[in-house]
Length: 243
Image 1: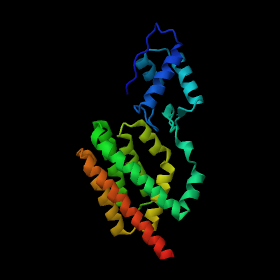
Image 2: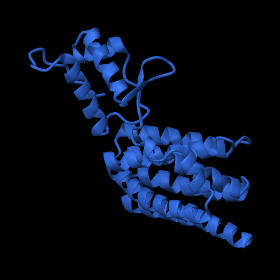
Image 3: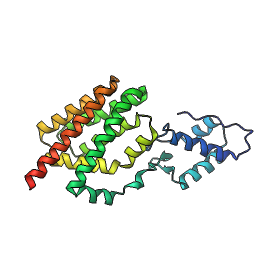
């Protein structure tokens, strides 16, 4: 992480300089939602500030909603866009068949853009995260227990969004994460984890993954569009059976 030593001659309070630096790393996408900050001792060393000054900055950042205490100790970056769509609202939207189609249209637009940008801009570190997310998704899809499939499906697409290095796009994708996850749960339930359909979905994810890691932006965009068209077709077929 790109933490810079704080200059001792600054006229601002050290804690203000520290908090401003961390805010900047969040705003430019260097620190993403869910990222853990280094341990307090390590971070104080990197910034070359005292631990009391660092602690004051962290307390203020937590109070302002930029970071939160992690269950394992330390701090993680908060998803500042998450409150845009609450879980109860997401569930109400998902229950409306017409809204489900609207959400899929939104996803198709956002994800076709994000896969193309990720193919062009992903760093080696980004590609490692995308690969790890893909391997977890693939492992779950090939196992007998697929209860976490929707969460891993969403995590794969969010890893791609993070690799765009477009902070607005990445934060919007994280902000609608609840909608994305609930929508994925619905379509996996819709096909009742049918082996043939799950294999088809996995092949589509494989195409997206391959295009991103080979940095083929055109192929990545087309793969994402094919994937979302297929999912929309599943919804439409289910809706027509219900009429």
